[in-house]
Image 1 (cartoon, rainbow, N blue to C red):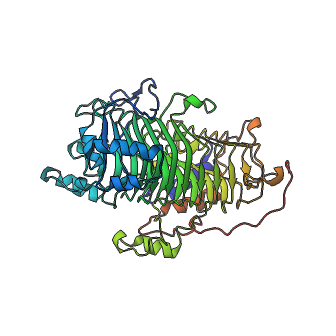
Image 2: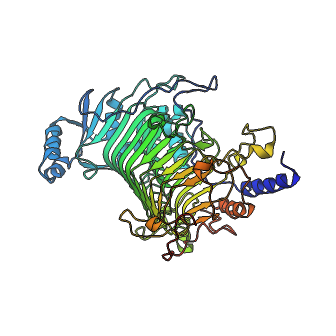
Image 3: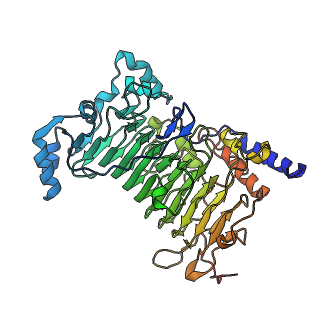
Length: 554
């Protein structure tokens, strides 16, 4: 108990934040991590590994189009063309889903150059018409629904679990789908006819490589409840929400992906795996690795509600509205509250994309078929973020932001703010018997170490609006070794930030003025509340002018 006055302040803050119905996260069936047993509520041992790309093993099922031979003939001479030419006589399928239907575990599906629209997936059999309509209404499906009608919501469905209650991959595991020649030659075009272009569900060992994916009505690539997956050499763009998404999955790799013009985020490692403890320095403690990703011109470059135990390194997140977010906002996402992610050696820059102005709002409120000039309005946002922000931790714990270049973000280079448990429908976080203090399960123990703020990799200055912003809530948050141009002190609010070597921040409930200013922003809704009163998140900040260099230790 901290007194009646504090209870009143906290109660008012929680209520003000929780008033609206939020358009956050994504609707999904109740899902579980691969090592979780819902019947006992217990986690089992963490087993498994990320699959590797295979050049042999299993059966080869070759897919082609009528014009594949002509496309192959137009390829530059070299190993890719020779391989495609050698595979062409073995082509037995014209649609990728047909090859998936014929496959068994450990098979490799080789897709020759062409554009694949998966037309048969759009035709409902009489017994599936109801589920096809539910998909058109963006309804939630059970796993059994997907088994009964795999293509009601998915252009390509890889369903690893059979019709049994064990949730284990036992019918289509270790499947590999590869575009022969790479993403420059093999395109999966959704024409917004399906929620998901590729869905890998309980499909342990799944590998997707070498494709361009475009125009889903929700996710271009979706990996769910899967232990072991690899998404590699992909170009994924113009989805209504996510370019590449994983959820309640473990032992995953995102590698060499370009993601752009997606309404929510380019890559989304949501509900990342739960691991015992949180040892952020131990690389093998991370369940999902994200590397060599170029994510740009999305609402968010990288987002992850409950994005736990993620290691994202050597990526570029740029020219989005916000570069990176991780959060504990949405209800019904396993793994809450978010914890234990690490962003290292990334470039996070120029995230100032103006997607929330009045003209763009009016365009995005139109039905998709009524929109004109899509090249002028390529992305319609589906999630609220503060335009001009490099990396935002919105209710996360024990994360590390280290050794990154963070520059030219016109609002904040980094920001961390509290999200009360009530916002995700959790009024009993288990921290104490006091309902008010149960709300303070975020944001704690976040570390910002050794980042170059407002500096390009070549050393030239390119300032952020403010380098570090914190709402002053939480314990153990700390900032050390971060430098501005010429080794100067980064700018911050508050002016003095707790140092890691001193143990970080002592718990406080935060600055109520800052928290109130953010609370109104959660009322955003793309249909009927695009400009919540009192919220400045959705106005593009002006480009900051170069500031005088302040020496370290000001």
